[in-house]
Length: 632
Image 1 (tube, rainbow, N blue to C red):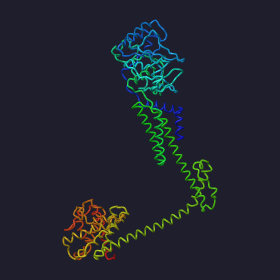
Image 2: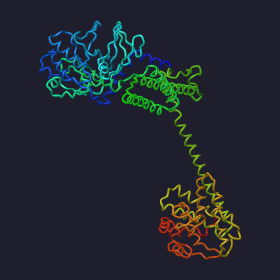
Image 3: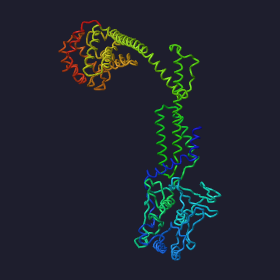
Image 4: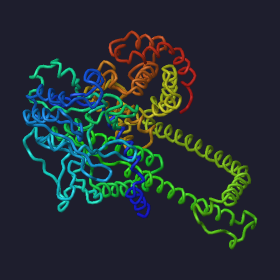
């Protein structure tokens, strides 16, 4: 809160004005030029005019001729002060009367006295030429109303606007101020507005006064338009700096008034957001960011901080260009930066306190050999403890020495624990595999003739998985999971499982349920190998062509591990003898699998798995021959 009030005071005293004005001018340049109102035309007293009519001040007859050429214009404003009488004044006065909608300028001198045109001239209205330069000389605003005592003097542009629109602007008064007031020795400037410049110099259309008098433009060209007459010739005109003057390309004063007039016509003058809204929004945004920064890590805080700065910049630019609203973002920028820095220091202090506390606890350990008594341990003071060279260096050196002292011992402990853990894991793994094999053997021991094939199937599976390029851990898992493929037979009645002859259709349907029984026995386990075993138990009788059971899956609907076990199980069944069939030699089993017979077709198998079997079938023969007589 104290920091926020400090930023508020800095902004209120004007220290951020330069930053805001630089951003203000930058926004104009980023936005670029806008389309102007084509009813506004500048009649320029340019070099061509001075060459033709002589050095300034030239005869006012030329002004009278100019007015007569522009008699169809809705309003004509002269940005030319005419305080000295001349022989041509009566003619010019008559031309003013004929045109009827002429606005002449006045200004306040250094003594704040009103400098007016000759009383001989009777314009429709008068208007002051004062614009408001900033401390850097750039004109950004104008006061549309100046009060000298009880006399109100409108701005030159607002006087033109009232004549053109036949309307009266709502204005403030010193007694009931609607907008901020700046009293200057009895002079009140009211109705301030920031000028929304439409572009750099020459954005508005210029016509040379000499060309108008010489009939280069028909009278109809000026019909219904507002004509601003003023100097553009170098050395004569007032050069005014604008937000577009980044190359010192100053603008003629008459074009500045054209910009102000255009703002009045399309209501695009730039309004400044209220101080209350700016400070309230800054406070709420700072409070939100502080809470966010405290609750998140440094990386997210930095991202949010940069995002907030970009968001404020984009919002400021969009409000400036779309709705002509200026929010003076410097206060918000500095508030966000301050909040981020504050929370960063807060986090750093918190980390320093923790490190200090940790340091104190370490140096007080008995293992430090009593190097520091408890009374010598400094209390945690956060950053205050670490900002001195002695504080931070002594703690770093102490912690480094502790690290060197315990590193070797710690490594020995780690190695010892790692070895014990590795041995324990290997024991668990071996025990798990042994338990699986023994339980599977127990389940298949109901049929002594089929109990020996499970270990051979595991070896077949390992050969195919390796050939197919499966990872070693997956191949090992598949090898042991395959041992449980027929675990569901434990639920099949002995009268069917051990029947010496061919099964009846009803009996075969019961036999097929061993796949579902096996899946139910193994399902629900959190162990990946048991989960795979459940899948194999359910699907190892499915066929690639969809003719298998229990679900009639086809192609890649069948899990890969079941497709591999299926061809191994069939090979083993062909090679093994049963009460109802004799065993086949390897060549006969190979030909049935690859060529087919009345029960088996090559289409039953995954083509990739079948091709792998063809490639390694000699290993199948070796495995069967090697392990056929070994006990389970």
